[in-house]
Amino acid sequence: MNIIIIGAGRVGESVAESLVSERNDITVVDTDPQRLAMLQDRLDLRGVAGNGIQPSVLEEAGAKDCDMLIACAPMDETNLVVCKVAHDTFNVPTTIARMRSPEFVNGSPLLNKDNGFAVDHVICPEESVTSYVRKLIEYPEALQVLEFAKGMVSLIAVRAVAGGPMVQHSLAEIPKLVPGADMRIVAIYRGTERVVAEGKTRIEAGDEVFVLAATEDIRTVLGALRKMDRPVKRLMIAGGGKVGLRLARELQDTHEIKLIETNRLRCDYLASQLPSTALILHGDSTDEELMEEENVRDMDLFIALTSDDEDNIMASLLAKRMGARRVIALINRRAYADLVQGTTIDIAISPSQTVIGELLAFVRRGDVEAVHSLRRGAAEALEVVAHGDVKNSKVVGRRIDQIGLPRGAQIGAIVRGLEHDDEPTRVVMAHHDTVIERDDHVIIFLPRKRMVREVEKLFQVSATFF
Image 1 (cartoon, rainbow, N blue to C red):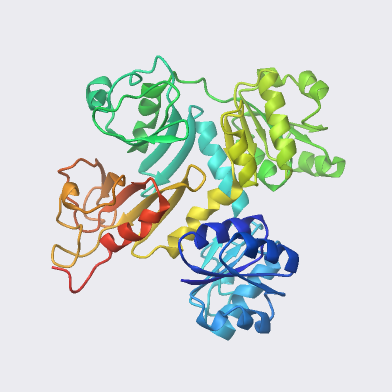
Image 2 (cartoon, one colour):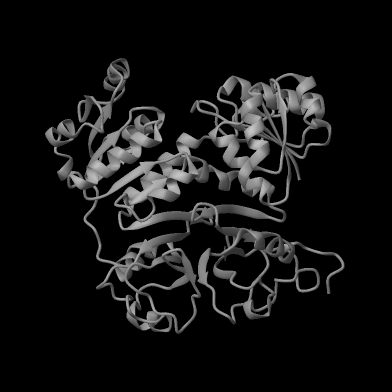
């Protein structure tokens, strides 16, 4: 696809990096020529210096032949105008805008193509990060929780701990060990190496295990891999920016919250937005004396959400050393996120990785419903709808072991009946003899992103395929 990205900031850079790796033709537009030059040196893309709202700049970027425009500029106003100009002047088929304001949402009349800003889809990194963190708070044993098929199926990543019912047992023994939940282990990572998930494979303590299961069975699955943690009730948030405030608002009725912010004026604003149940503290989360006074050792979860990666890392390391049960750090730079893996920081969250899946669903060929990036973009999980019949589809009417999936790719689960109101919706955990039916939502794990094109071709309906 020919894709134009407006804005070479953190989100724009991450989007460009992901899409370039899939052999798309990418052009990035930004007002900073130096930043563009750095991107061009590192990635196989073209840079155009200028203001994206100007038709002449969009024309130079190739808007006439553009398949998709992604507006990731810092200002909401810029992104809205860029999408409007791209649609009205160049008839760009698909426009996506990154919006910080919660008042511009998908489906709003303000965004339609007839008399609005012509935005096909809105992405909000702050909202995505908040939703991501909420899942980790709901399931404190998990490293990652991703939903498919309107929430009916979840893919969870969990660290196996000695003493768990499935630890030191082979995958073939799982049905006997955990009879109460049907699940499918699609990947096991031991350190940096992926272990082939087959019947004789044993789960060892410390393994990072990716499990697909019906959402209603998640707690049973987690309990099979590690001792269940107590629920998160006491929460300390470092950083009262958009993400910190949004998270505190959503949790204020169910959790005890302490929020630390360095800016005094921002503290006053936070106090006006949050009730007295949330304690707003003016100070620095890397201040050991402050952390001691506020009893960080008693916190179920400490989460660093400031705009400074170094502060988030240092504050999280400090909180963990001082006794916080679990710590999460928001880290924008990919290199930093890689560095903290294996340290005492339990989870590092990359804002760009939480939204990249939304964008990839538009780039993917075929009827792709959802895309989730795993292990910082190295692996991927897809939800694809199977269309057609035995004559024109390579998957419909065939057993899973008859489908030519790339080596290492696995179909983990199928959701049946989601497209039909006249039949019940049910989750089918995939086995080698499971037959895929028309309109099934098929959830596939890919250990390497380069397999995506092969899988997409398998699910494309062909008039000439017999």
